[in-house]
Length: 154
Image 1: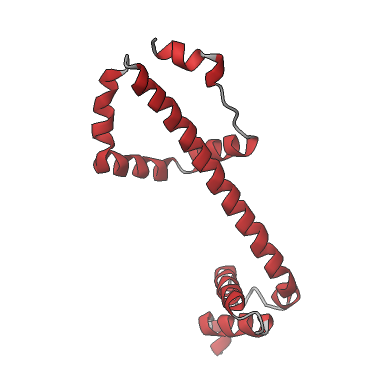
Image 2: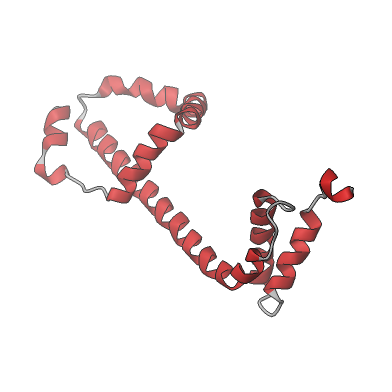
């Protein structure tokens, strides 16, 4: 059995979700430098030895392992994507009760990075202490991180 026979076998098919395909495409289009660094690190950390084994490409067991490796990789990628999206949805629901407070923040005085970081910190503190006032936690975090500009000093 050769490479084509294993991968063209009808039993060897698998399906990819559109979300996973979108992630893979986005990574290629937008994170090629990060992917290159990841590949470089992988080669340094032992991938080079794995690549030497490709000479055994006529070994059916090796080809079977490769096929399962691809499936495992795609399964992990999809699982991680689902976890990240679910976490973002959960956080957005947590932020809903803070929207009125966020709308009162003057973006000319406090930049969005400070607001976002403060929001994340306040939310994590609220998770640890659900009895706390979320708006108060947010405003404390904002004050802790806010740096006045020269315009404010005049």
